[in-house]
Image (cartoon, rainbow, N blue to C red; front, top):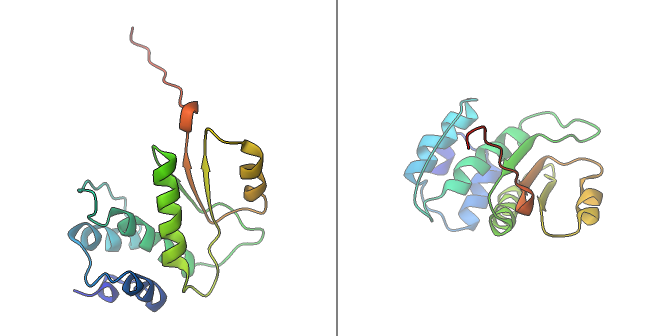
Length: 144
């Protein structure tokens, strides 16, 4: 089955081909159509199984086929546990979005670094924010 059979636009199929992906993985076959249809998806798969593309490609498809608002407002928030994963997902988003007609503004935000440059990048809005709480995670429990 080709990626185009999953309902992805030609620019996204081209970006996937740029990465030399020949066919979608099982997690992508299951997730992409469900997300494009507006469904919720929970998936677990091994490292290297294509999970990032499984959720990023339908996000980009939805952005590409929807009307851009002005001023730009946050459309998607992706929360991840580490800054390394946030940076990796941000890079993947930029790669997959590079052939889209309208540019997609993606910003990575994480703890442990100066907040001011991150706040400046958020001015003017963003389509996608990839974030991690860093050292700011607070755990609350009512049990001793």
